[in-house]
Length: 428
Image 1 (cartoon, rainbow, N blue to C red):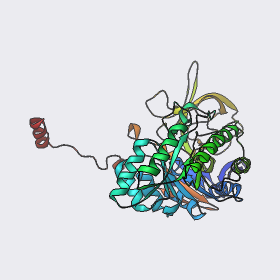
Image 2 (image 1 turned 180 degrees about the vertical axis):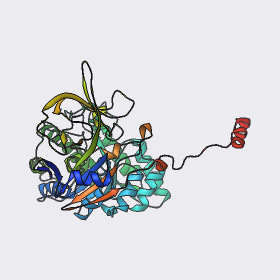
Image 3 (image 1 turned 90 degrees about the vertical axis):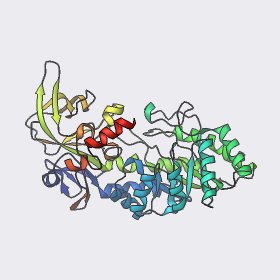
Image 4 (image 1 turned 45 degrees about the horizontal axis):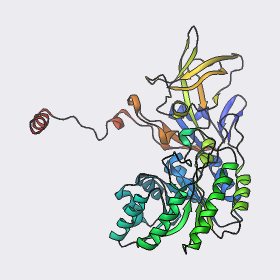
């Protein structure tokens, strides 16, 4: 459920027309609905109200500090995968004791930053990482809480690029190896404390059975750990619950919550969840303007001022995003067309062979369900300034990230002077 809908022939975000926002900030731009963000957070939080739990929003989905702050003010923790995300989370007001640090490639300086911050725990992805955390914690004279991300070899039935729980994926440690690592840490690593088990199997999952399969396997590990005297307090289920982009019918968080609570009943654990897409995906759109239309012998093209550098998902995954006119014009009918951007790549598209309104030059369009993995994956490819971001709250809207300028594109760069260049060539 989101708060983007038509009033008459105009598309609105909550109480503000998209057309009005665009007139002030231009295109392309990301527009988020505050009311949708809050609703989606509470849909998750309420689903687990009967058990001890912690919702840790996955920062990678959308890392704007205004979005983070919206969730944090509602009581959310955060799931991070880099030092930069930790910095953003703290800037947005996150409680360090509600921060979990995931990711396969944590650098030494990032681990140190997290330890000094006092986060809840690290989700460890390899034996070498666990030993690195122990070493750094010892040097800092601190204890590092950790969970091991267990790879349960469960097929999440999703796109292979966003599957993370199979043996062939780079994430986590296989269950048997994980048990050995927990025991080794207890007996030999004095600066780390095992407090949880982490199990994240993928993203955009639209069925409940993969989650159930993962829980069953993880419960067996928890039982074995407790027999070894290892006091597990947390079960981190990760994220992964899908959203509707097209015709998907993912379960509501309440159904997901019931299944998880039933499967974990009696374990005496605090459950941690890391939803990202499910909380922000349908809370945002990417607005663009039609630059040109082009009729070919085999294809019709609608060329817009947003590109794959603004929203990479269609190019990366062939993902579907609904496309709607900001202002309807029912007199034009529909055409079959590709919606493409200005980037010099054949993969620069938002839709292919799609039946769409007959957009004309100057028209405005809304690319829906762009709140997750939209701006956070955007780039400056083709030296394009990144889009601005806007938050709508009721009848008002605010720019929460300014549009980049050409000067921003070269910030930090410099031209090597001739004297420096000669010196470099001499010594090399």
